[in-house]
Amino acid sequence: MGFATYNDIINALSNGKGQAYWFYKKSPSGSGAAGIMMRLWNGVGFPTAGADPTPALQGAVPTKDTAGALPIANPISPATLHLLSMGAVGTSQAVLLLYDRLWHVGGIALNSNALQTFTGLTAPSRHADGIGNQLLLEITVAAGSTARDMTINYINTNDEAKSVVVNIPASAVINRVLMVGLAAGDRGVKSVQSVQLPTAMSAGTANLVMFNAMELIAVPFLVYVYTEKDLVLQSANLPRVADNACLSLMWLASASATPEFWGKIILAEN
Amino acid sequence: MPFSSYQAVIDALKGGYAQVIDFYKAGVNTSPGAWYTLWKTAGSYPAGSDPTPALEGAVCDKNTPGALPINNPSAPNRLFLFSWLLGGIMGASVFMYDRLWHAGGINLNITNTQTFTGVTAPSRHGDGVGNLLLLEITTTAGATGQTLSISYTNENDVVGQTCAIAVPGSIGAGRFVFGYPQAGDLGIKSVQSCVLPGGMGGGVANLVLANAKQFFPIGYANSQLLEREFLLHVAALPEIAPDSCLAFLVLAAAIASPPIFMPRIVLVEG
Image (tube, rainbow over all chains, first blue to last red):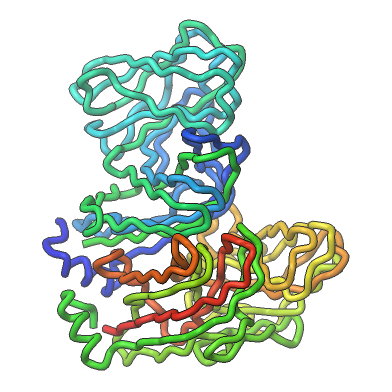
């Protein structure tokens, strides 16, 4: 099902089929800097702080019920849930990004050159075809002082084994997010098997996270001034939010800061 | 009845189902990046007051002095925020909330458990989901920052949950601090007591149970007027519960005493 017309959206909003969630997040330790992406998964506030997945190297699929996720309600089948708008403001000029945290694994040692193979779940239960699924690294213990490459081994949407290299900058701070580009021609990631640093860093630990690009929404704002993005008419998008989606936040910093953020998302089901 | 189309909204607006509320609220002396309550500021409708007697809870409604004067919809209609127009003398953000319940006279200089009496739960948003707390400072706090622990009942009727609010030393009257449910909780149903680990050296506060309604920017530069329509401009159509006590908070962007001028809120029922 979808919304056949804008009138259907109006009807849903006025008929108890809308969902509004206010959020507040305090950036955790590790100041942002201009052009640096930082996570809010573990920031205190509402929703409450998420935890790094444990045990080390064991994959898990977070859902709407996982601590750290916005507590959305699933639509009543066969209806589908869609993001209509999002607004945000903060104590530092920034871009706030909303994403569905499909799968994650923690405890990746950056000070090891061994092959680190993931156990447990290695694939998400949402967006299982992999199309549009992307990867990011979250630094959970500050990285050593010399930049190193990490090789990530994954299965693409055609069930082919692929690998990609991501550079981990020297002294990457705790809570920094590093986006991972996929191998040329790939449309997404179905599952992730292992990682390896050919040369170990002197320190550091990281999480690897899979998210879906279709649900990545960015809201830029000036300091202290609330800004909204409408995803129906202003920016035709109307992203579908998968059942059980683990909606979380990250932020792109414009300056060194440890800000606080407030905002609101509006969802509706058809 | 739910709106079946945008035309139905237009029909409601022109058919006597709209409430156009023009009002004025004086500002408060602000510091950048700090939140302030406008509950007690003067304006075109009566200012609110601190609840009395001390520690006795009360439910606020549309008839409580300090509430934006609205009319309830005719049953079975529901009431929605259709548009908002607002200007001020500096860039900032305004936050409209439903003031569900409040209690005053919390002494910030004692370590005894302060137990609330009378009504401890709101009559609106009684399921607690999404409800948060505001600690409104009514007498400037002493210089020693402390963390106020508030005992509350969550959305699942679990009693003894804790909301911890870090109260900065010397926080001034008119400011407030947000309080959020503890990890794993989706909201606050009722509030039972609060306690400080040490005295702050002075200070008195109100505790407010609130449900977030809408953010709004006061211009991207000084003295601008902005408007939002919550259907075609930003798909949201926030619902306003019958008897809502609508009140306002400001996130300040500068040191100023900002009058909010020419605000207009349009509500529509259907």
